[in-house]
Length: 64
Image (cartoon, rainbow, N blue to C red; front, side):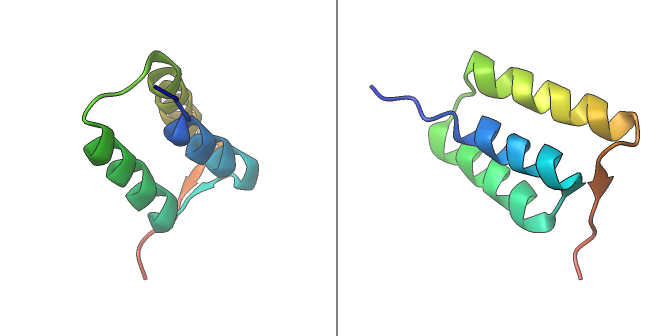
């Protein structure tokens, strides 16, 4: 079984642009639903994203 860590890659994108866009959020939710579980690597990436958002370093972009 090949693991792609898709959620980690999406989090990396959000960290790079310093924004959690609706598109990235939807893709993360899709991957969580599709896989039905979360790998340790993806879980740690989501924890990092949440801590960066709590610290104000990542902006949540609202739906338009």
